[in-house]
View 1 (cartoon, rainbow, N blue to C red):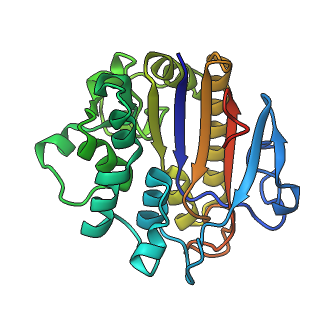
View 2 (view 1 turned 60 degrees about the horizontal axis):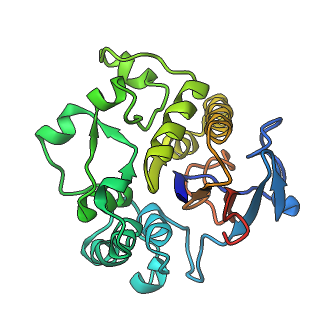
Length: 270
């Protein structure tokens, strides 16, 4: 059975010239795109501006990735933060989870791999990320920290370091171990979506050591995921919504192109 993993990374653009050294997935500058990737992957550069002036932002960028519709064009501008009513309506009608179910794939075959802390369920939020609303609007269950402890989900910090520092009794995962968990979830479902946004946080903090560590961990985690998947039966897509971490001279987002990476069965189509 064909499977798809969509791995969304927040705030990673392609710099004009290399910024980070020895991180094969994220080091090359724009002049090296399109390019081949380790593990027989392919990468292209995508214009995060989508024909709309201004700095690309999270709400419209993520909505575009989730729906395939030019969300900034619909809004007439780039929208930051969380989706409002118009973008929520778009996601509810055109989201990947929704369209897959229309094709006859049951909800049980869909996975939103991110887990949430207890406070999220105790005090439901009116404002959530596009990715979270995507799952909620399609009826795809949200995972808990119990799911993390039992290997059925990952926190957005896939090492669990942040949760452990907050006192939650969870195992510290290496990037390689986290990759195995994501691969296992991907194998069990027809479509799996995972969101990672610490990269955008590092960009806003203008923290080069943090940015370098996160990108190295992210690369190791992705390689581990790929190494534990049957890529003749699986397509892995990695994409970002806007640039940020690649330019630590300033904290706002950038207008740089963003990478779209693909491995596996249908990589040429991506």
